[in-house]
Image 1 (cartoon, one colour):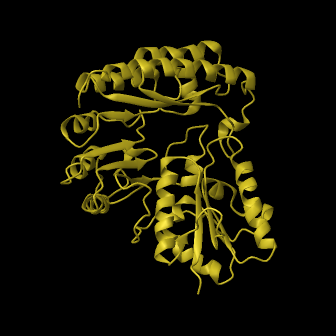
Image 2 (tube, helix red, strand yellow):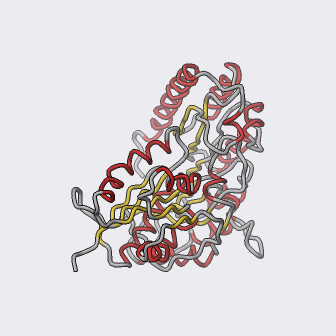
Length: 381
């Protein structure tokens, strides 16, 4: 018969990129090839992200043409995966009955099995909590030099603005041997750089028996022969350990860079966000990094216009930035997300104020990023 084809569109974070690569690997192992631009696909996968505003509307607008193809009698399976799928569940099927499967991120490793049910004529909603299984198929990597490797799924934190615990479930660490085996296989295939992924990566190992520490994982997998560079994201100030800083300083493959979101420089806002740390604690972590690794890159995430944020509280965020001078910051104006406590608070900041604060924080972040880059001028590395 004719070659069966799939399309895969992925929105959002590195976790989603890694999930999409794994799902593509499974589709290929089932005999599907990627559809070229303009060629119809028999399996359409949309891997969704619910972090930004209007995320749900984007999903419905994307699905429109595919649903129309199906109504016109074409034979195709429509799969909505990722965080909007987890958040909306059966509501997606009610809005777009042409969807064949809705699956949360915890099922990315099981796409192949679940599709079998679809091919047998079932409409499937896979959003229940589940133990994330090791995936025997090879991800379809988007690079031949750098690879993403998941080490921990989910998040146990309960930040009041964040939808991730609802969509990605509670923390599940991958066994150390499985992580090491995946990295060894990547190096054997010629990969030079690996980025370890986790929503709250420093808590890797706390759910394993016996408990293990992320610093020990870094030393172990960072020592794989032939691995040139290793990075990791995302660290949480509450769990960031001096032992991790030591590992980065001492393991040659580990790049001297840390991605540690601070979200706000004001203790009142941090408390309302449920972050579990203060601005002073964040400055202490930066001091520890710069004492041990003076040239390390420090990047972060920040939110402006969180409910109740005053001008003075926003100024505290700018002051933290002036004190630290970040290499780069991902910034966002607060937007209410479904199923989060802060979304229903009464003291929402006006859109105009949020936009103006976002402009100001971006201006300062760009100034510091340029300043930090100057240190590379004239250096040979």
